[in-house]
Amino acid sequence: MRIAPLLASEHPRWLELWLAYQDFYGIALDATTTAGTWKKIMMGRVHGLAAHDPADRIVGIVHYLFHEDTWSTQAACYLQDLYVEPAARAAGCGRRLIESVGEAAKMAGANPPYWLTHETNLVARRLYDRIAKNNGFIQYSYPG
Image (cartoon, rainbow, N blue to C red):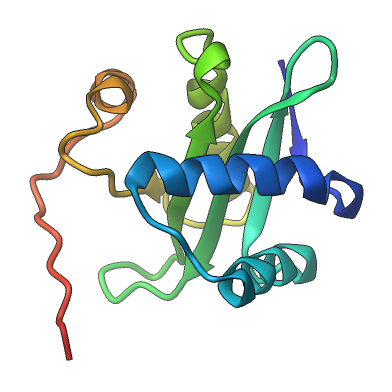
C-alpha cells in the first residue's frame, strides 16, 4: 500500500470516496461545500492523503489540518475525515493512513493527531481502540 498526497488529477476518485463517506454517515453535503473541500485540499489549507493499492487504485482517503492549541505550545493535528472503501478494510489501509497523518504531524512539529468518530462506527472503533487512546470526551454541537 502506498500513501501519498492527493493530486489534482485524482479528483474523480476522491469524489467517489468522499460521497461514499457521506453516505456512510447518512449525510449529503451540497456541491458547493464539496467543491470548497477539494479547493482547500489543493490549496494546502486542509491536507489530503490517498491510499493506493498495489494496482495504484485509490482505496482510501484521509483529511487533516493543523490548528492552534491552548493546551500546548505545539500546533494540534486534527484528523477530520477518514474513509476506506469496504473491500479494502481490514487490510491495514486505515492504520496506514492514520500513521501517515501521525508522521506528518511529527514532521510539522505538531502534537500527534486526534479525531472523532460516531459511537456506532464499530468497525473503525476496533482499529482505533488498538492504535489510539480514547480520552473519554463527548462532543456537543451548539445549535445556534
